[in-house]
Image (cartoon, rainbow, N blue to C red; front, top):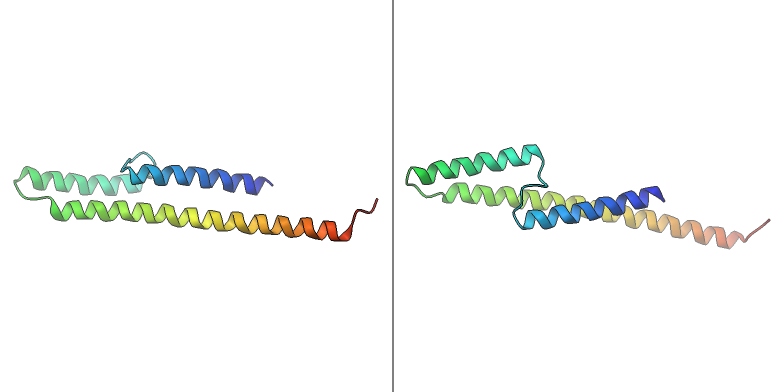
Length: 104
C-alpha cells in the first residue's frame, strides 16, 4: 500500500514539474539542467549584444526545453505503468483471497 501512495505522490509531483516546464519555469529543473540552459541563454545574450541574431542559440534553448519535457513525460509514463502494475497485483491478490474463502 505504501508503494502505491509513494507512486501517486511521484506522479503528482512529476505532473506539476511538467506543467511548470511547459510554462518555461526553471524552478523544477535540476542544477545540471539549469546550468545548461543558462549557458545557452548567456551565449544568445552575447550574440544579441554584438548585434547578431540569437537564432541558433534560441533554437538550442528550445531543444533543451524539449529534452526536459520529454524526460519528465518518460518519468511520468514509467510511474503510471508501475502504479498500474501494483494495482493489478493488488486486484489479483483480492480475487485469490476471495476465491479461497474465509476460513476462521
